[in-house]
Image (cartoon, rainbow, N blue to C red):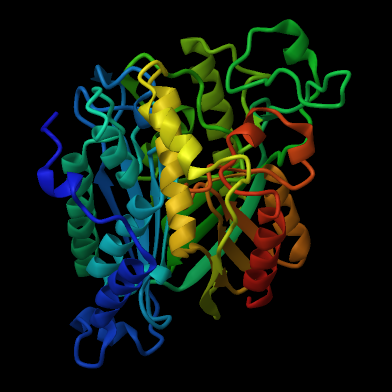
Length: 475
């Protein structure tokens, strides 16, 4: 990998002022007289859509999952960022799904800002959600700078590669805007997914707390035998049409998207492989996959981590995508709107900057136990700077695409659906990953892995609930 540039090592941390300046700078594209011709033409309510995609596959040697598993040795199948721009509903709206583990803090803000710049809109009108595969990059710019200071060979990501991905994204959006299509109809449908998802927190010890975790794969018979637990068994699909032609389709399902990982083989895993199979069959439609609120959901009940299991999981998810697709009934799109809500969580009180910095600097720690605290320091400093996590929702007649942060628990997704029972609510989590896991407040007393690494406090539950109510109330 290229060395870390000196300019990056000395870069000032993201502050609320820098965040606001970044948003305002991009927003300057919206000033009267500054709109591109295509955006000005679309501002009259003539809806158009522009799908785009670009490669985000890391090179050989690049860190995977933030630098605590084997780095890239080879590529089994490439990683993509896939999205679309909607024009004609005010300033352009951008939605994008990225085959990465996560985009944290400034990395997420910069990715949204890059796509916003290319589309002629503001970062607040851009939703970027990661799919969360683990044989993929996990980006936190401030953490990379912090671990680089340790001069211990630690690395989170290659910032040169990160900048290349931003450039590819801007180019892909600009090219897409040269071939927009009329957006006339929308459709939604769902189908059950068989034998993939199971709750990870079903093994409760005699003390009433979570004991062993049934993760993405499992070979322990007692854990496999336990019930699925609380999940959302439905895959949801929302499709966009130009006349009778389906031009883009978004698929949503809540499960950690890993069958096996950690050997340096880059892959979009079973969720990406299912998406690619559908894409090959419907070349004229751009297919996107979003991981829902899967913070406490994995495939371990039905996955032993073998290569054969990856094929089986791919088949099952693909079957649900096909089944949902057959139920789609396009209807004229009459009303479209975009809403955002700023979330300012508190830091989990068990973590302090001094304590986490000590872990980062402890040379006796394993790489993961230095990098994860570095990510936590980045979050603590971000919260101190007052830089919010932006929640968003795209409302399409009776449909809502809801965008939530990080590894939110499945209960938030189920709650969102209950808050708007008359709407078709499709939820994508893994937006801004700064918070890491977002358990419900009821989960904190039960302990378990997810609670132990949650960067935000239990009170985040109430804040996220209020944000979902606000967004769904503005449909």
